[in-house]
Amino acid sequence: MIIKDQILKIQKQEIQFQVVSNQHALLMPIGDVHFGADNFPTRKFVDHLSWGIDRGAIFIGMGEYLDFAPQSQRRITSQLREEIQREIDNMVKEQIHRLYSLMAHTGGRWIGLIEGDHRWDFADGTSADQYLCHLLGTDFLGSSALVTLKPSGLPKGHREGETKIFVHHGIGSSRSSGGHLHRVEDLLKWVDADLFLMGHSHAKVAAPIDWQTVSPDGIHYHKTKLLARTGSWMKGYQSSRPLDNSELVSKSRGSYIEQKAYTPSALGGLAIGIGFEKIPGSRFYKPALHLSL
Image (cartoon, rainbow, N blue to C red; front, side, top):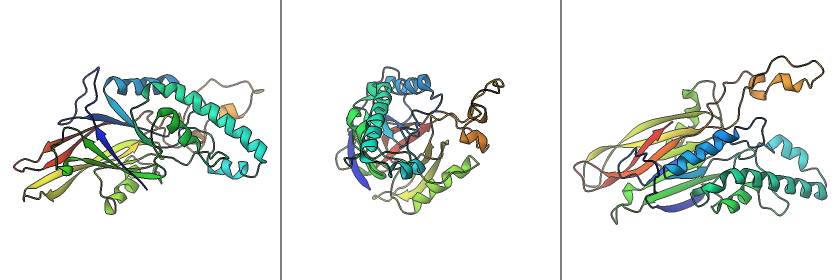
């Protein structure tokens, strides 16, 4: 697990979007991008990032930035000659550069990127996800990370007002909206955090849980923890008129999502206000979190 502390300076907002007390940042998880998939929603993706920048957002990567190389493909390509693997490495780097061209305006605003199931390791032992981190000027956060966000305006000595985030690409899925959060909620049993983020299932769902606790000076208070699946950019269903019978049959079959009648994803991601507030009746503080879909 990667452990990271990051000081949050108040981000300049061209357009005001204040959702919590003493908001220092609007955190936007970006994951399950699947760049390179058929009919990737380029305009929507770029507009989403720009919407965040205008509102002072910072970003965290949730894995699966390219559609290329799920585990089944990696098993096949691992048997190829070194020369062929190097050619694939170059192809993957070119695709990363194309994705980066859509994200370049977000440089300097990333906490870091974790990896997901769709990933590619280069012959030199580094990965495509690390290469994207290099281009964006941010940290690679491995398979999972525990990140502490430290608002710069929090009074000295009051670390209880910091926000701890557990980030994992995710496991499991569900056919119901609430079911997507079961595996996220399991994390409450063994991770001390305020915000739990998972991708993988392509769902864009969240739930607050009010944690009951007592401050060091004996004041009972509610501390909101947030659970979330962070959305996707992969279109599951695309339509057309009946195609000519001489055309490729695959064009009429649809994606694997359509073929298995999976629920289509609501494209996009979340926006989470990160701040802090004083506990009523206490001299101590707590994180302030609020989530917008």
